[in-house]
Image 1: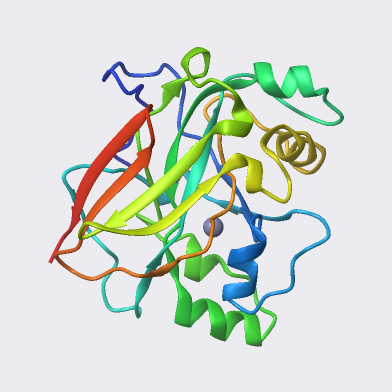
Image 2 (image 1 turned 135 degrees about the vertical axis):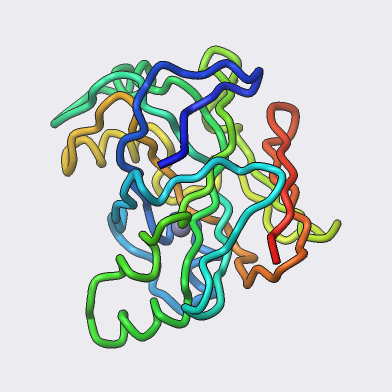
Length: 222
Ligand code: ZN
């Protein structure tokens, strides 16, 4: 595995890469665009550490398993353990940094698995399925409810959203996750995607931004 957490200034973060806890359907518009019901409690799944890659100048997609779709998401780097019933203050203090993730998904395979009521892992947990940007230190992240994301592909705005639109907002989500899975330093929680998901093609130029805080550009290989 060739990944190390970094801050946006290039400093390596002294935390191991752990698991990535993901939430599905955390923005109502995205749930509707895929004809999924809006859930009444967070829909959680986990990507393994082996799915994480840094977003560099070029991003290589998995080959031969069908179309790869993007979902741009706000990512929270965990710096302190969170387990069981935790307060909002504990959840807030556990965030070491904020960044962006691409929750890459083999959508055709996921649809087949969903139709059979099988687990999604093969569609979402493959090597390279979770590209991550560097993290903005929590002290510089500002109000969590004002965090926002944007994705442009080939200069065209495809996705935008803010944490204020989340069905389960950031701290409530961390508190809920901690009741289900222990979060350890180095784990990452990704917080769901707004509407506008779609397929990635070789040669696409991607610009991921947390306006005013973080901007990363990459090109899809091939
Ligand atoms: Zn997602």
